[in-house]
Image 1 (cartoon, rainbow, N blue to C red):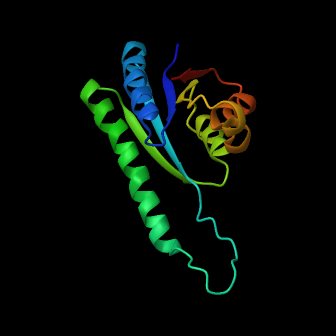
Image 2 (image 1 turned 180 degrees about the horizontal axis):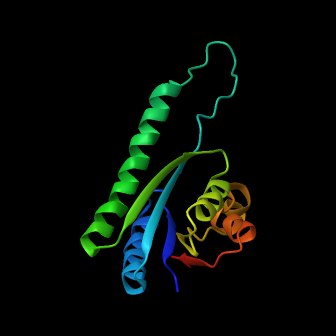
Length: 145
């Protein structure tokens, strides 16, 4: 039934747990995993004179390296289980849009993703990429905690 699984990762402990579940899920269904890590671009805000601004190139290099490590974790777990894997690094201010677009582009039939389960003001101010994915996709989404 499920042959192409999209697995977003942010490198968190919850994403690691989701990886283990997704690999087992893929193995049971004879599916492949498409992993995606979305990097948000350098947040440049003009500041007052004399303010210290981090180096955008260093910022991007570090985020790309972290995204690659996150995808390598999935790749290693998938390889150990004999599950086909493809990894994608995307750059966007809207991670949920990249997740939904990747699912469509790679013909995924389900999205498995972790949710931090934020509540109250944290949920209001930080938002939830998982909720945004749920609102903008027609695919089944398995939310893991």
